[in-house]
Length: 345
Image 1 (spheres, rainbow, N blue to C red):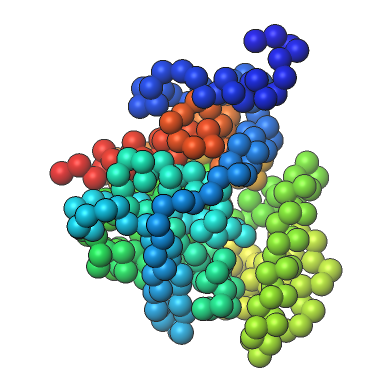
Image 2: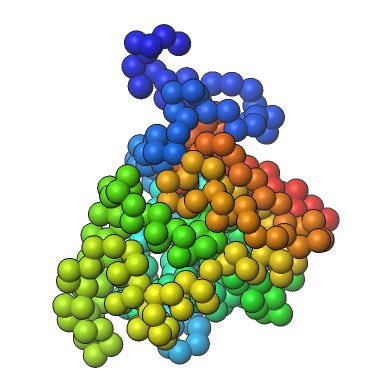
């Protein structure tokens, strides 16, 4: 590989290598770095689509909350195979390309796949035009229970905010988590919400901030039109940072006195010690949105059930490297290897 090698050739080279099950995370040197890995993750997966047959599964929760789950069942008896439950991140939905990459890999391995839409996300907006936030683990528990009534075993992979929310679900409501939930993989989890909000608002991350804020404002306006009695018109105007958004929108509509209270009560880091299911926390030291220290500093339970892997590079939900998973998404391969091991009797 020379200095003149064009980027398409570098990306094509990522497909080559040893069998996926034998590979560690070894990105090409040109693709290392937090911003590169984050951007390449988007570029490598942007055209992925979900093609297996899909069934809409509507879950009725508390407080008139309705969740839309997109379920794809393998042929044959449903109780003969485990299901992978996928939880998207901030601004995502079941169509998020990282969710599709992980789901397609699980599908190829013979698992059922259930892609969760958090309240009001994606096509679930018509069912429940409500705002979700990082502290609503009750919605996920409802989803896990619904899946548990169909299949005896399930594994969970959450991405970014969905990873943090999944940790809260298992740690704060263990009595309601189905016994057949064999394990969790949390990819790029914002375990300290305050630290992550401050990191995104730094100047080097202004492109990410603009992207998130644009989508958040657009989402708020749709909800305001659907349920004007719940959401005040124009409240989103002029908000330019994640912390401002959480102070003006998330906190008051989520039942918190301030953004600081929301961060303190909804951060998953302090709850890691309560986890009693096999859990893999997969993060990158160069994640531009989640400081590595904010992932590393929390004590893990003495049981050894929780493993933390912080790789030198990988970006935010990037992890672009040789892999069997679509979209060069090595984290999907790592997640399924972990969950397959956890699901064995």
